[in-house]
Image (cartoon, rainbow, N blue to C red; front, side, top):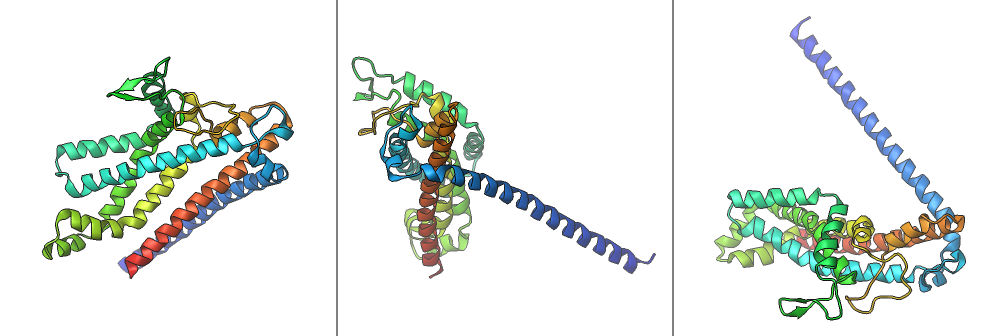
Length: 306
């Protein structure tokens, strides 16, 4: 066999493997989409008849026909809103410091390794950390706990849940923001420095606007994860039955995943349908939040292109 024929055979073999890999990828993707479609169809069929405005405006009940989602809905909005306000500035600021200001030495590599490891820690461990660090350490007694001269009655409150979820998603947001900052070409920084801009002016006016689409993608991933987490909130003791909505950050709370888990674990078959209605509401809130962030990301991309 001459060299030309040998090359042609290997070329044909590589193309055959490439087509086989594409086919296997399509099959695997199709299986995932079909399974997801079956699950969503079952949830919609079972939950839509129970979904109404009264369902969103009632508190939980032991009777399926009177059960509502109001406390869990507003509790999740409280926790996710405060988690976003707490996590996004800290995560983006940490990414900017590590990527733009810190010296590229052993300490910076150690911090990068630490953040990467924290991003892979199971969520239930963050729940245990929140239970020890926020609930029990700052458990209110007759007098609110004083920390650094400030009264901090954490307990099983919205504030404790917010801090726990913020610790959970902060590494994910920091890593995603760093990757977005790394994608900004160095020529943009050098051009700004060449025109006499300071490092902060370069970061504020050039680097951050260019990295905004990637940073917003990280926000979507982190906040979506926080919205659907159940294990940390269960571990830190978020309530499963709440007949009120939070009015301050020190109030007890429940969340949509916890309420859905509570309904799904009940033996009455009607509660399975109520849980399906709760899942529909959770998915609607999640898709709505993602849609808002995607619109902001698309707007940032258009501004970047202009």
